[in-house]
Amino acid sequence: MPFFCVLLWRMKLSKRIWAVIAAVSRMVMWNLPLLLLWCVALAAPAVGDLPKLWQLEYPTVRYVLGLLRIMTCSVGLAVTVATVVAIVARWKLLRWLLALVALAAIATYAFLMINYGTRLTPEIFYFIIETNRAEATEFLSAHLCHSNGMWLAVAMIVLLPLWIALDTWWHKRGHELSPGMCKVLTSVLIMAVTGAACAPSTWMMARSLVVGDKRQYNDSFGLDTMSNLMFCRIAMRHADELILEAIAVTRKAVSTPARRMPNAPTVVLVIGESYIKCHAAIYGYPLATTPWMSHEMRHGRLWAFADAVSPFNNTFKTMQSLLSLNSVGLGEQWHQRPLVAAIFKSAGYQVDLWDNQRDFFSETTHARGLNGFIYHPDVKKLCYTNLNSRNYSFDGEIVTDYSVSASSGVSGPRLVIFHLRGQHIMASKRYPHGAGFDRFTVKDYAFRKESFLTHEMLEEIAHYDNATLYNDHVMGEIFKLFCNQDAVVVFLSDHGEEIYDYRPSIGRIPLGSNNHEYHEMDELLHYQFDVPLVVWCSPIFIKHHPEKVKQIASATNRRFSTDDIGQMLLGIAGIGSASYCPATDVTNEKYVAPKRVVNYEFKYDK
Image (cartoon, rainbow, N blue to C red):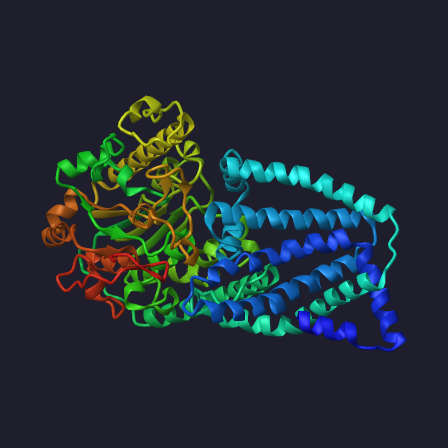
């Protein structure tokens, strides 16, 4: 690019061409502060990728290629957009508004990189779409109270008036366009034209990065903000196609109805949220966070599986695999296998879904994300008999509502799915205060000796453990609801979490190529991917199905990945179907422990 710029400077162009260049350059120079701000906002992610290029094999060659790609496509595309913005922004209020947008983009990129080690991705878009007002408020409260979020907010408040002052000063001074400045701005325009010319290839590259259900980034090339937006748009449109594929596969599978045994039991699947396995007393935690489950375990009605792992630390992707019959360890994608609820329904089961994360508004405004998948019109028709009609402040209310709305007067077997809020971010809002669940306080953590812990951190840990205690109470209510029925309850979490367990970190840092440097990778994998998996059997189920109980009890130490939970449910229910695979049913004697890969990339057991 510099070579072409120098070549152009030396060329003796006609006066008409120089007049056009000079006219455009004057328009760009008029809004030079806005141009520079937008260049930074759009090109920062691509430039930030330069250090990663040295981590690759043959770093020198790939660094040069990556640098050329960044300077021509990424930075060029950023300059293209910034130039257009600078030309059209002729009014003061419009300039200030566009400056605010650029600063917000910079702050967003900085926030994602500092807190999560990622940039703008389809997963971030899914998160935004799925987040309702209450969750957004909780998320902002949780992060703005921490130093990183607070400093970014302060920077936004300070930088905007500083930029406005710079812009005002710039427009008050004269703008003599010297030959040297004209050539500099000509170089900018060349980059803008280059970026515009590269836009189609960037679009095609973004399309090539969407493979099946996986997000793939080519580490040789930096992706600027515009390229990321292109990629996210393509990936989200691709998600719609995957839902339609899953529906077609499910329709084909249920065209031949599944078979159920004569004394088929009721099966209850309870899906928790952000449950850290090592914070459960049934897994050795020193605080009594699971009194109900511990009681049932002592009386021989509950079994805790020791080695269950979620394939993702992301709710959206985990739920897709939990509700499908695919096996990630076998290389299967969720949309390539039928939905487990549809198999149960085709076998004559009543299928009830009570979901405390259901966003009724989002179902009607888009077809992407978790709600768009679970509540797609065709999915609802294929899979469910009854659905909840409202949201609940706390998870305990979901059990009460189900007991009143759908559990009475049912003669046949049921598949009941409860999707809880669990210990989701802002754990202090996940349990009713003053109702006996404020049991743990800072004074209970004398056994925590880590030097980084502060009083505020210990308070958050206490809230998390209280939310875990309330989750156990909810499980106790579910046990009581089904204790006089031929029923089995399976509880697991979508993924794990961090709450200042081994480092001063809360939440989940996404795994990716920029996380290889963490010395705590082993701990990160265990805290974010290890999940509790427990099976509770009613006294009637234990009496009527002793062989099933024996199979469950003998499987508790087997290596397991939760994407195979659907096969486990089919096996426990005794449903005969061509979609059932004994090798991926952990309770079956033909079970083969999977090669566990998390987030499509990391070999968990290595």
